[in-house]
Image (cartoon, rainbow over all chains, first blue to last red; front, side, top):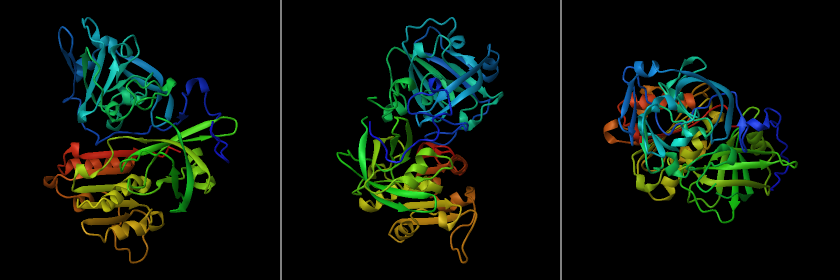
Length: 200
Length: 240
């Protein structure tokens, strides 16, 4: 271990270490990170699609989507840029609900977003009550900067996997790297194993 | 990606709150202008803290330079700005990020929009443009609160006297007597004046606080620029 001369650290007692993954610090802000401009899509223009390897593609308008059974979710989130935010409160639709009744041989999901952003995940990481399509934060409609109208929420992986401005989930037999995964970031992104970059 | 140890070879106070740290790194693989590194500090009892910092030097420069702004209550930035001394060792890994980069093959014309210490990666791009012999036309607009908060002011002003490079400053809070630059926060009119029209298809890089980036990117979209030609990097008040 390499000691930094004169460094003592100030923030070590701020949070339960069991909730903060290695290399992360806790913030009360909600920083914004995006590779390009924020798309501005109204609820009327918005649809969500389920495409790829499934018997019947599905699509929801905003009203149809909002009529699905919702869940309130309180989770800790971890951004690869080192901040973690504890007890964030979301409202959304479980991905299990979106997949209900479908028959798919797929093992992977590629999320597609307005602005061209994509991210890839194993199907098993977005099922079993581990992922949602969230449309509200702290009881308020999701701001465009934070991914509104709706974003993926996969809190057990680094937050770039929780794709903003979600428009489609593509079910796939093979794994296709998404946007950041093609620019040197880790393919899976488990914060507890500090999988930030390719090779970690 | 492995951690490396760099030796601090030079420290320069850029403003009251900003310092540039020049590092010598054995075996550094090189970087592209716009990339960043992760810095890791370790206390004697093993406590560690990590943050990301943009690389402010060009790939063509001999030393790797990080330009760091001291954030209020920021345990890493305050150490880097106030405590670090020449010959100290600093642990880092990188280079990281492959999208917010500019290299000659991407062409131009190039529009660089910087807010506050968001100038750091754009300074790397501008230096690379000058040092690589590229003829891509560049326009840089740099917004700061006051003249004393402008980082690399003389260097940027000198660059603006080179062929094909246009550098403009805007000061949003305080201006010295006789100030010749812009005097307001960025808005659509200011962006329209500085950027080439959408028909010229400029490649735009924006770096600064979230509000600056949102305003600049929204203005470019409203003016008709292709969102696929606009690359952004944002930092909030945290990032310590």
